[in-house]
Amino acid sequence: MTTPLAAAPDNTPALPARPSTFWGRTAWRFRRNPVAMAGLVLIAIIVLLAALAPWIAPYGEEVQDIEAILQGPSSAHLLGTDRLGRDLLSRVFFGARVSISIALITSAIAMVFGTLLGAVSGYLGGRTDNVLMRIVDVLYSFPDLLLIIIISVVIGQGVVGITLSLSLVSWITVARIVRGEVLALKERPFVEAARSLGFGGVRIVFREILPHVIAPIIVTLTFRIPSVILAESTLSFIGLGLQPPASSWGVLASDGWSAITFYPHLILFPSLAIFLTILAFNLVGDGLRDAMALRDRQGG
Image 1 (spheres, rainbow, N blue to C red):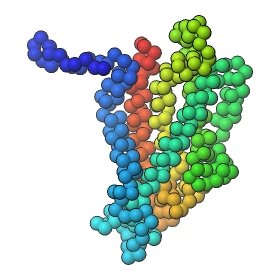
Image 2: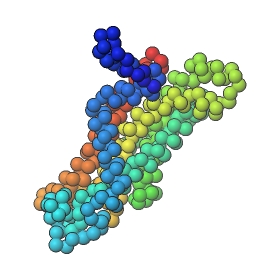
Image 3: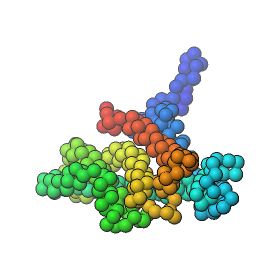
Image 4: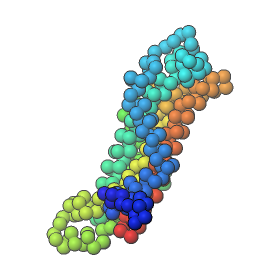
């Protein structure tokens, strides 16, 4: 909690004191970063538009206007229409629901699985660590997109299939990061004190170590979400991801590619939505990484 403002001897208002807790200092530094705050506001707007799409979209997702097929931006259709006369702005709103939902669910699964695996590997060490990390190294040596394509072909190309395939690839980076953090923390005095008190390994990992790993996990999450959005969009764009009638941003961009010469708005606006979302998450991730300074997290 910050200290209230106090008047200086010359009656000039004093600046607010720096918060004393780690999370307080993190929030204080983050709020003082205008670029990161702009990214956060943009994310909030995009998520809000996606959540309220059924109520704020000017038209239904599949509503067709046969008299306005392939129309450019106009007062009736702000972003134009597609080859079936569907309003592109409405489809971008509904596409946001699909793309962001897949990204959030995938990132959550990857965070949970990667954190558990990395924590077990780092804390137990020895043969367990060697086996788990060799598996991670083998998977890490493959290009992410190649692995995602192989898994999605095996599982399927629907929303569930794409979500699972992206999750099975995304956890690898998380596991490596968490393992490194656990290796650095498990010999710290507070962990040794917990062992001397007879605490079991599970309690030490979940009650003593993982709370100190939350910061890098959160930063990693902010970078994984845009990576998943880009991966899903890429797969859908090349025809290996979601398929119509789904309306993710990748599907919309793929539909517009074949008509890019004569109707560039079909690919421009979905691509712009992808760009702005990825940019916003990256700005927030950079801001969080700067705010969660390692030396500050370690009490320095």
